[in-house]
Image 1 (cartoon, rainbow, N blue to C red):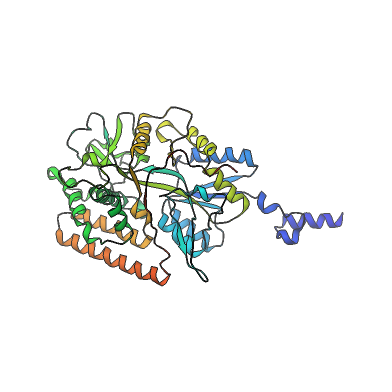
Image 2 (tube, rainbow, N blue to C red):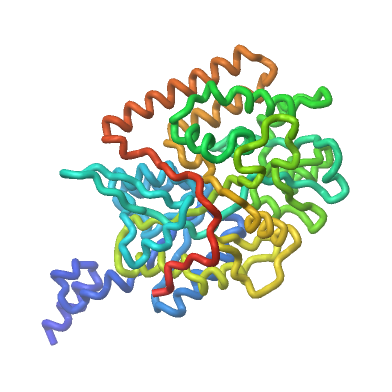
Length: 435
C-alpha cells in the first residue's frame, strides 16, 4: 500500500515517466495544444472539428488563436513551452523553424499530407550529407488571383478598393497585387524564378508601374487613405471594403467572401487586366494560392496522430459542416461539406477546379526579413506611386536584401531556398489517411 501511494504521488507531481513507472502513459494523456491564426469566431468550425476528433481518440485538444502568431510562437519556443501543433500561413517562417530544429519532419505515415505547392521540401544541413524532408501539411487553403465585385458592377470600369493596414503585417494586400501581376503577365515559370531570387526585383518594374496606373485611374489617388484603412474592417465597424460604397472592385483572396452576400462574386484577375499587353505563358489559367499549414513542434504519437486526422476527409467534412455556407473552408482537392455551399463559395471552387497552374503566394514563401521588406516597399510606393525615382530606390533596396539573404543561405549550405512554388492543381482528394 505504501509503495502504491508513492507511485500515485509521483504521477501527481509530474515526475518523469521513467521514474514514475506505473504512470508511463501519462504524457500521451495530457491535453494537446494547437496554436493558430483564427480568432473572433472564425475559429469556431475548426474547434468543432477538434472536438469531433477528440471523441474518436479520447484525447483532449485545446485551440489557442492569436493575431500575433509569430510573436506568440517565438515567445513560447524561448520559454521552452511550444504548442504541440502550430498552424501558420508562411512557409518562409516554417522553413526557419525547420532549420532551427523547432519544427519536426513528418514521419512516413503522415508525409503524404504534404501536398504541393503548399508544402515544398526543405533541405536541412547536417553531419555529412544534407537531408531533405517535408515539415508541414496544409490543413486549409485559399485561392487568390481573384477580383470581387457586385453582380451589377462586374462589367463596369473598376474603381479599385484598397486597404493596406493589417497591424504588424501591413502592406500584404499590395504584395498580393504585385505578385499576381507578375504571375499573369509572365507566367508561372518566370514567377517562380523571381519568387526564389533567381531574377531581380528591378525586372519587375513594369508590374509595379501597371499597378500604379490601375490605382490612379480617373484621377484617383490611393494615398493616404489606403495606408491607414484596414484590408477588411471599416470605420463604422462593418467588414468588407466593397461595403463602403466608394469602390466597385476588390482584389482579394477567397476568405473575403465571408463579409459579403450572394450579390458579390469572384472572377479571375486576368479578366480585369489590359489584354493588349503580352498574355502570360499559362494562358490566363494561373492562380496564386495560400494556405494554413500545420507543423508539429512537440512531437509525440498523439501529435502525429492529430496532424494525420486534421488532413483526413472525415475531419475536413466536420470542419466544413460546422462552418457557415459563406465561410466554408477549402482544402487541397476540394470541399467536403454535406450541405450546399453559398454562391460565392461555389464560384471559388469552380475557379479552383478550372486552374491550369497554381503558385504559392510568393511573399509567404520568402524569408521573413525579405517578406517584411516587400511589405514596407509597397507601403512607401503607395504613398507616391507617380515618383519613378522612388520606385527605383525601392527595387534596388529589395535586390540588396535578396543578395544579403542569399549570402546567409550560402553560409547555411543553401538550406533555406524553397523551390517548386508552382504546381499543377491537385486532382481528387489528397488525404493522409485517418490513423
